Image 1: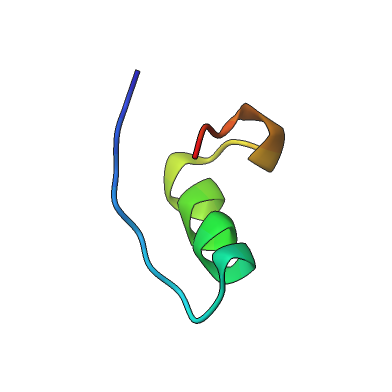
Image 2: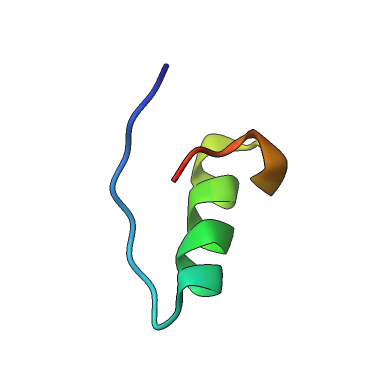
Length: 31
């Protein structure tokens, strides 16, 4: 499993950034 650290103004922003970087959908993220 890959681990990255991202940040955003809100949790939703950070989730969006992580999804774009990993090229996956948000339901596959664990946070």
